[in-house]
Amino acid sequence: MTTATRADALRLLGQFLGGDAHYRASAAAYGDGGPHALSRALDLFLARPEIGFVWLATVDGDTAGACVVCRAISTSRGGLVAKLDDVTVDAGRQGQGVGGAMLSALAERLRAEGFHRIDTACHRGNADAWRFYAAQGYQSLDEERIALLL
Image 1 (cartoon, one colour):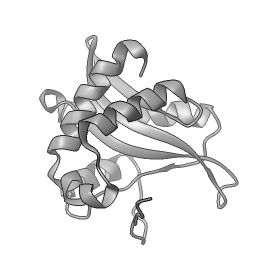
Image 2 (cartoon, helix red, strand yellow):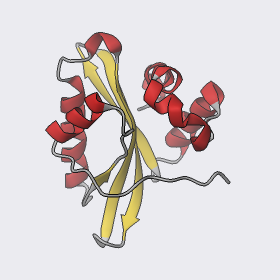
Image 3 (cartoon, helix red, strand yellow):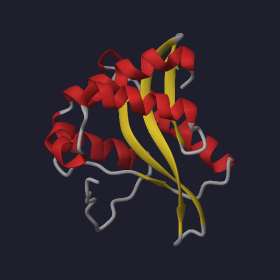
Image 4 (tube, one colour):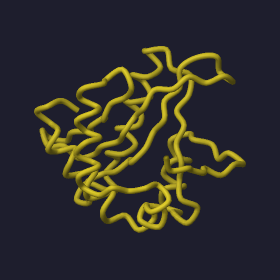
């Protein structure tokens, strides 16, 4: 995401955070702050790219997908890993391979930058997302994501 594509990221991520039933089921535990929090987060990504970035997919010049990536250090890998959140594809582009292509290109870039793993979470009840991630080579872990609001 750049300043020029910020509005596209805001639109796609806003639709996801506001409308995805699986995300909404956990939104309170995440401390979801609504559209204003998303806007502040996008500004932080632009101001602090060393922490993370918003990765966008385009089709025919239109932004069709978005995801959020934060950098972290893994003690088990002894190096950089990426924390992947808020993966979404525009409703009119779903089922066309946009999400898979977006994550494949992201993985290629992260590998080239020396990252060792991509971590993400998936709501237990989201069977479509589980199938999508499995098709991309992601493996289920025997653990549960938990959060503490500060």
